[in-house]
Image 1: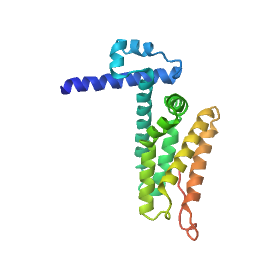
Image 2: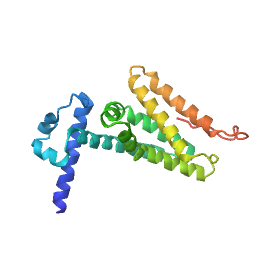
Image 3: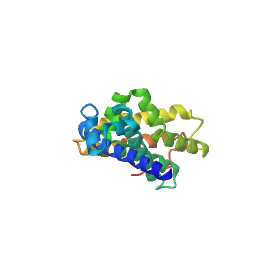
Image 4: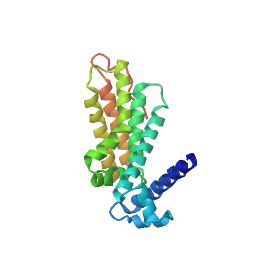
Length: 207
């Protein structure tokens, strides 16, 4: 039984990996499920046993991409012990993960268009946004800022990062666009960090 489950899990991971390559190269609309089936050396029926449609397979791919981005956020944020630096590093990691060539089309362009904003936002909320909220809650508990509504703050920052990533994905021809983005993130967090009477006591996040 365990062997069968392990084999099934491996088959699903393989399908997702192959489908991701096709969705990245051709986009959702121009990806034929039959091409994924052939490369996976499976029958169409075998694929439908795991995913009922191309759309369901795409959703699984998006989940994998979002999970990968969340892992990068968590890993990069853990490089610092300072909570403000963790927040900056996490925001930076999210943007970098989102605009990677093998991720940006799936995560930023086709994701919302194919699945709809409600589904896309729910997936985002379960991954990177969840980590962002946790970080902000920790910072509030440590007195880093006042009684700020965490839900509103989480969606505000997350929305800014998503929109910035989408803009950056279309600005990839400009080498300085990524550097400009990181400067803006640092500037925003620096301004958010300061409070009356404390501006001179804290240093902003550094790259």
